[in-house]
Image 1 (cartoon, rainbow, N blue to C red):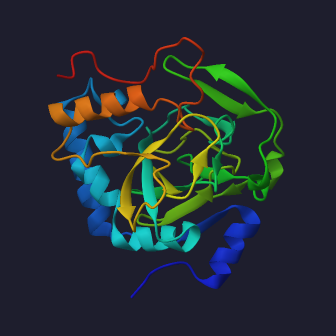
Image 2: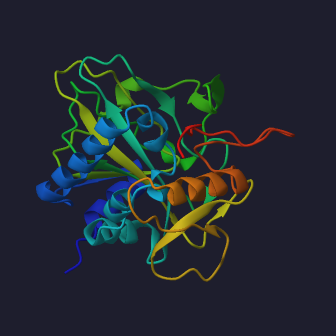
Image 3: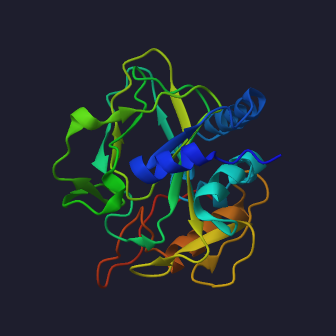
Length: 280
């Protein structure tokens, strides 16, 4: 039986730009995922910062497996249709007491995708106000807001100029819940002031019919068929961050660097992304 969204949930998504699906992933699935992530971190502490970054779904078969979980894809299909690309997976963790916060932004501010992709926040562990849960401003998904750019070591990120934070909704999630929000929705999060680690995986899902406003994107076809070919095909990883998968990710990010998370490539610039010089 399908575990897709109800008509009421679909209406809420259309109105607010986000929806919460409760209990999509079993506790066992989340615990197994967390155990594999913890094992990688323990074995490769210097590589975690880049391996858990953009396109982690090209590096780890267990990341890809979670992103293609049938119950999760049922939810996504309710929103964007039966032909689905997984166009990014990225870890979002916050350590206990961490001051890290993500400023207000729209993921598609600089490279728009039509129809828009959706972002699924997979609560591998609970998300609370105290540990810095995701916050979304309802109704902000209808247009791109004015923004400014902030420089990071490997990319620029867009931050919305003005946000009425009093309207923001805290997406408090239990383990196994999934919050899905529109690629244009204004969102962010606060620091983790709790004693527990916030642990999540964020996946971007795009309809095969979609087009980018700039450059060509790439993705893994995870359900249905691709009748359009607007996005380049990505390989499915075998194993956990093998030499072959590291090289595959490098090739994809160098050939198709203009994706919404990374933003436009400056004229004459070479693609830059998080990677480990000694990864092989």
